[in-house]
Length: 256
Image (cartoon, rainbow, N blue to C red; front, side, top):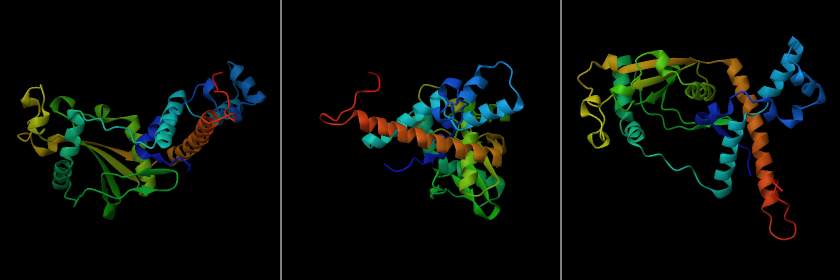
């Protein structure tokens, strides 16, 4: 099985700081165990623990990697969630891009290129090559879910995803654009239609954007977390192979 390549949309799932119990065994030396047992640590001891943490995965990250192994072993992709908000996002994406193009004066078009650097991969929404500026389009379901301030728009998972795009497209900034447009009538459901009909509102009041600037320290951490994910991915694959043999060579399951 080939090495794991992490999708930009999944990078955030790897980035949580692991608890001490989740540290990669290769870093769990007697010296580090002694450091963990202390309540007060020197700067050097803190650096040693931080190094182990940045090269290890949290419990949640390990769960995500096991999900990826399951997909690879059984040869499937996760089923698409087909809620009204997600369907709207797909159906109005072109309209959102056109609205942004009018407001920015830029010839924005939907990107169809997927890129990889051997560690991560991604297919961004919009790449404005002449000014090296990428955009990720979000279509809020209604007025009620439209962020009107950056505090409402921020999402750590999106931030890590945009850092991935910055790496792949060699960009210095990536915008996350929330663009509010009418919801197709068949997707309104039981909510009041007035929450979904928005074209009477000036266009510039229907866009909230925040920018993720390229961060080289974050890139370094991404590389370390992807390397840790690859190690754990191979470990899970090897365990699966060992515990799913046929015949007398079959190993005992790890829980026995």
